[in-house]
Image (cartoon, rainbow, N blue to C red):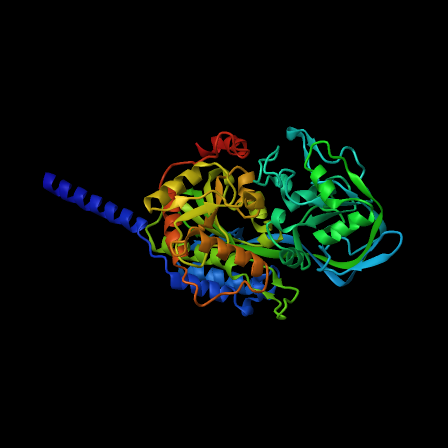
Length: 553
């Protein structure tokens, strides 16, 4: 009898061992990664804009791939049945017809060309047209109100009926020293904050001065991202979030405006870096504009797939990435109007699909694993913002979020990074996984670019969920840091948010495949454990997570 028991026990242990080995062993196929990116970034998908034929094709493709991977529908429940998607209602805003913009200095009137000197976004207030004559301009420095830093750029100025001219990034970006973390961008430096703050103050509008280094991208990116269709979540009081005018202006054009007003742009910019700065009117300078806006409400979709947990199905680990790009927009020098988005974010979605295939083949995890492909990231993280505000699975029982955005399609690197320099146990676990593989963690090489606020993990972080956005390393095994940095700089200059972001047949995808093995292992460990990673004790997101602690007991 004992021998039988021992034999059964041995069989059970062997089976458990094999199951564990199967869970840890996955095959990530570089060729399949390349094929997914090729398809999703082809001209047939028209740049994957929300509310387009490209969205329909993209959603259909993702659902078919998730089905083929053996996953279950993970979206919202309709008529008692869970579907593959989550509806995301969005305001859609598009400038129709010509954009008439002109500046007047009292002596002469100069017309601006949309996309050249200025990039005006379609008004997201619901207005069908925008028209104003001779609006005054006032320079408000970096446009920051930060009581905790005893910082106020406004000093009581009334912005009603005025256009606020504002600098991008934080007051200490230039010097690297100050009250805003040095080179690392805070949310006060982000363009979204600038627009939000001027709206709160009742300004007619915001004009952000573009400079490549503090923005972290060139004018082509600004033009292409702001002169096409705009989207926003549906708001009951849109004017509280958006002023009637939201725009960017070329630095040289801004410097010319200051000169016409008898002001020195560079001198005032330096003054704006100090706490004593006070707003400065551009005396004698006014701006006029007129354009029509097509405003409507549309419904886009997040795609959600599920690998149900065997023991704790109500606890979830999320892998995410955005499926959208810029669609069809202004033509480049070659006349190409399709913004294919191969790297951004065909790579992240290909990664999501490959991880789904790996989980589909492996034994069921103890906790559920969710694969979330979100919409409208390029319009302000709107799909992830909507999910975080309307979660399909409770955020209190979401173990963590591993986001993937614009990964390298080249060979392996000796390092990896994440967006921003947040401190959390999820990163500690990833660092440990990387160390096992001889890969080191490199802090965000450009914290001044504010990448932490620019990826779909951020809405989850704001809600307290431990979340990271994975980034490929720059220290390539072939060519080192010089090769990796050169590739990144070239991509930002010629392809990022431009039609040139297209799939290339010679991309090996071997680096992505290696990294995805590591991300699979990280998520699998979380899914097969009872751990609840948290933010560091001094993190601004820790309090939100701690408030939901009782729901995890």
